[in-house]
Length: 122
Image (cartoon, rainbow, N blue to C red):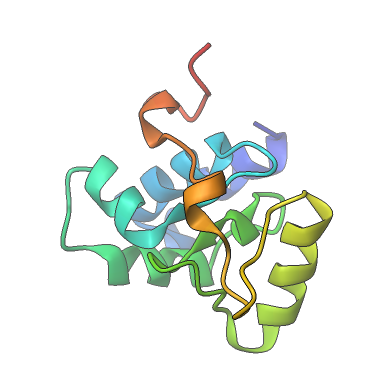
């Protein structure tokens, strides 16, 4: 993780404990893979907190791969940033279906490979 990310996490006025846990998971997602908001919530032990994961992602530090978190059906969200998200995912080689959604079955990351400290298990 970068020093900027660690500085962000130490700023108690800009995050909650839950948000920092979300960011640690997002830091694990490898290039070319995606996870859903609900997967992150489930992994963090809060299976009904997908919306709260979305709130955390709205404040996600730019240096994290925020584009790799999508809706459960592969929809690319992000309001004004949806086009940028799609472009970044395409650059990473993430496949899309003809209806514009991510082919989530082809590139869903097994979130179990994430450790609690935000590193990817080997």
